[in-house]
Image 1 (tube, rainbow, N blue to C red):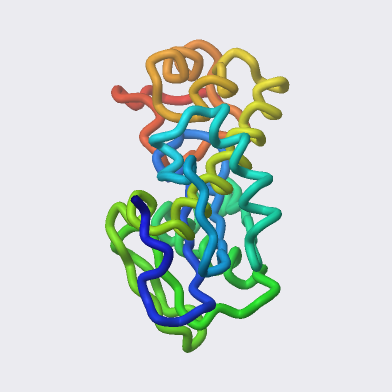
Image 2: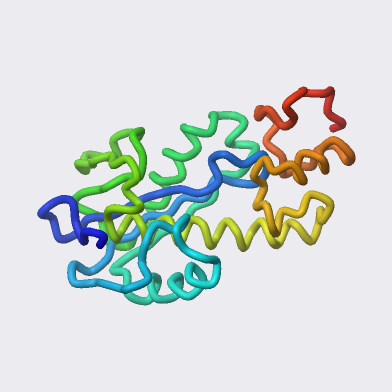
Length: 199
């Protein structure tokens, strides 16, 4: 059973990101403030849920949240600032988008930078402990998956609609055969053998 809040503040935002370990596409982050009494039997860490359940939960979260924000940090920026900074930047941007300023922020993982003067707490596996982080993980994942399915139409040879840009065998074979695209992260180890890649 996920806990509603970590702090005693009523306006507590949970934040999380998706796509850190991918070879292509953006890092997508989300922040969510849920009402204190919000509960839903399906709500859990997005990795524990099927696509169908995540897609079912997204509109429920968006309709019931006091505020939510979703931001994209594009692959060129990921290459420029590194993936950890991209995750933190994305979370900050998502919090910035909230129409209500939170009094406290809970963050999935163990790395974060102060956002303004709002107190925060990093929580390892927070998406399987707190409702607002779980809600943020679902928004980040569904928005990112939707985007990867869209760019898969442009470059179907990597099967991003299925692997979402993660380093699967199929994705790496596509890179070997066709080289890389404008969506690939050029600072990542795209192939284990790091062949000279075709730009």
